[in-house]
Image (cartoon, rainbow over the protein chains, first blue to last red):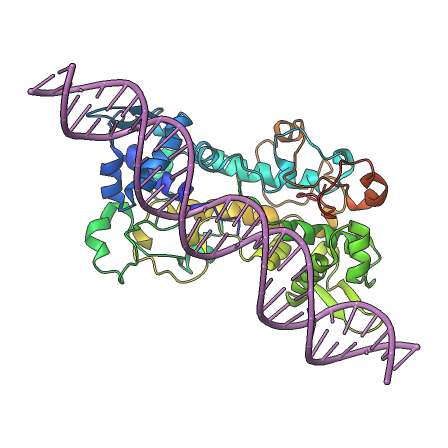
Length: 193
Length: 193
DNA sequence: TAATATCGTACTGACGCAGTGCTGTATCGC
DNA sequence: GCGATACAGCACTGCGTCAGTACGATATTA
């Protein structure tokens, strides 16, 4: 578990489209919808949120659209996740709100959750949108350091999907035809695959 | 976000009760319910799951109950989370199931999610039930290493709760009276505080 | 045999997510 | 100014999962 929402997943994929294009280029919701095969209302909804949170700047009217507010190197996963699903908090009591919990100083588990929380935050904060546009290289910019990264156990076993499988945006239109009949035009997968 | 379920939260609190008692001691669902102020059906339900996953051993009949299957040092958070809410997977495609996603080798974001996933897993795997019973000391057993742990930003701001605030199990009955009227007898907070 | 306590499963209400639709408003080009 | 375009904001609808409850069956002890 600890699943992120599809909205966030989609949002990241959409943002990688921006990051892959020349800086400052304007994309309309419609264009992005066609490129990624995501439903237009959903794309529109997500872009609005990202605009409201300052990750995108919107341009209204004819020839309008959205463009990145910052360079892809300056946008991290925690910015995106924070915009689309709120602050990262594994438990209620790792949130920032001053507590109604009167037992704070005595609760033994709370400090541990905050630590776990911080690990997740740091991992997300150490991954930029620019890095997200290309597969993981041997060296990367992540600030979180693991003793050994055992990607093998996770990577070798592949993945799976709860809903309509579909191609990554890079090769969406061509590959779609090879997939089983889709009950909906939804195109992207959780994880962006 | 990335919130764990209340069931998991409760489960961890319940298990800390086991870990705080002498090894091998049998606890009934009823006793644990009274100690933690959690509703009995909920406690019972959670203990069943933990038993099914081999974290607890059950003893039926009169003088029955549950006891820890392993020493608290040998039970990690990932065992508990895995039992109560399935494998840790931020995105669908970081799951272990062989993929319906035909674009796996070409998807640029997938490897990054797997890395984040691994960070979370390692953080959870590095925290034992034994450690969970006492507040975070200066040094700990976590295998995940951060360059700097900035607990201050999270810890200094306290916490908050989405539902009925209640005391930690250690001082539950006495402190409960000082809290605002509760719409339900639910006692524990997300995060166990 | 009765009491106790777990086991398994089914059920219900509430809530959040996924996705859609509509009205309003700003901008551009004619 | 006017119409077309595209974003802004909001409300709404299924649907699935979570939180919590209930009950009959089974195993154990005295």
